Image 1 (cartoon, rainbow, N blue to C red):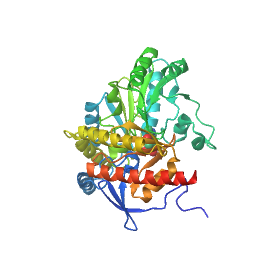
Image 2: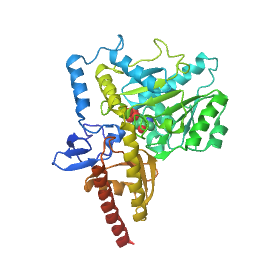
Image 3: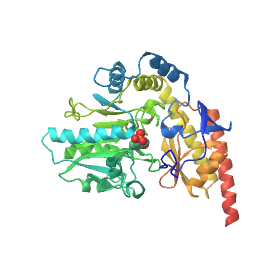
Image 4: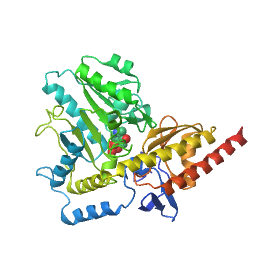
Length: 396
Ligand SMILES: *Cc1c(COP(=O)(O)O)cnc(C)c1O
């Protein structure tokens, strides 16, 4: 009989009951150090008192009114997001992929409005992940995601990530935009070279294309800057965010310049739940904390500390780990052993991390993580690598 929860995930047999800061407790009372942060979602950890306060205050006042009316929280959050970024205007969604869909529609409409209706195609990166709608899987093209779901939208041309020549060669008169993640997340924590990001901006301008950054995983402080593209000092025309901005409440946003959003007028797009008062209360609260003086500097410092410790682990355990990579608190380890073995053993030893493509594991602590927790995580990683190394040694 089919499970009552549609079995589209190979779920781990653990149920969590409670979380606090960087820790989770399961129903058996076991404690885990959570370096998944719900896949870069719980940016401020679990049960952050300020987020709890802001959400419950809003819950007592008003939950939902629909987008037939103005929503005060949308206006304040949009004002703040546009003041903090390249963007002039924001559309709020419930999830990452919806933010990305809004980016796709914004690009198409832009070219339609500006006399280039043939520019309907997108250049995307190999290894990219943009979500699970039929359009988003058409972009990612991975066999696992697309098999059996066709026919898919034929609008995405994939090129090797970080390869400018290949990207330029793929541009045709039908190309409308370049869409990339500044650091491939699901793809295995592979950062774009900063020069590559700058070259994408120049290339987009040269060919009259829009540049879209998918910052759904990299955004909202994860890399030690509010948005990862700031490291390269370039701005996109459109950006999708989600995950961290809700701190665990489902929400996302598509940010665009006035120019890029020229066609997104009344009636062109919508969402029943998008930008609802509960989500906006939490989004504003997350932004309060992440933009407080010193917060991002601390993420950068903590990230460098963890990065240095991970590099030391790679040196110490060459039969288990191959490389440490990433930026800020979006870090990854490419493994020599199967990444799933490492993920499982780490969990048994009390540390939660996320697998990714390219045989990598993702290390995504909450942005509020402290040095004690980093010490604890590194000790668990060290012990687990020793276990795996000795196991491999015995097998050989
Ligand atoms: C998670 C993610 C998405 C999809 O977000 P959902 O909320 O699952 O729809 C899209 N792009 C990137 C880069 C992501 O990490």
